[in-house]
Image (cartoon, rainbow, N blue to C red):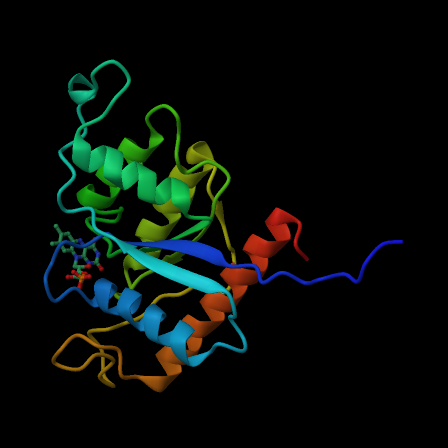
Amino acid sequence: MAGPVVELPVTIKVAAICGSLRKASYNRGLIRAEFAAIETSKEEIDGMEVEYIEISSLPMINPDLEVDGTYPPEVEDFRRKILRADSCIFASPDYNYSITPPLKNALDWGSRPSNVWSGKTAAALSAVGGGRRAQYHLRQIGVFLDLHFINKPEFYLNAHRPPRKFNDDGDLVDSETKYKLKEVLVSLHTFTLRLRGNC
Ligand SMILES: Cc1cc2nc3c(=O)[nH]c(=O)nc-3n(C[C@H](O)[C@H](O)[C@H](O)COP(=O)(O)O)c2cc1C
């Protein structure tokens, strides 16, 4: 006779990447706010772990740096971290209507054989209004990388416009924005579980 059905907690690992290398980056502020949102919304987004993945030390993409199918140590480390994740969050500004060079570089290193992005869910965030153009390019790149972006809710923020969204330490202080950020996390959580066949 079959025993009782035990519901195992499903933890989703999320890799969070910031497209800006700027120390006081608003987009990195959004990623920090995700950690806070998960901490304070345990009931709605139970079982979600976010790891911040640094991309500033990655060398500029160059296949000559690949030796016998291995990559420079920083690249290997980065690729391992992405492989461990179920899902990715990209918070990036627009640079001249597209994604930033550091983010493209990270996406390119991850795409080298074997593509570490494949099959993961993803969400895109932008702290500055123009970021929507970068998000469309990111989604387009995601087609080839086999990343599955949530469509809704879209998340664009006009961090430069009043009311003030971030304090002097770069922490998100605007409650409406915090709520919207939480909605993105809930959507990403649900979509990831659905893709895995957990709901
Ligand atoms: C090289 C460069 C290109 C930029 N291009 C755009 C752009 O096309 N559209 C836009 O709205 N802002 C553009 N910006 C402004 C950035 O989006 C803005 O400074 C943003 O705050 C940077 O994000 P961060 O605070 O996370 O560093 C550009 C900034 C730089 C440095």
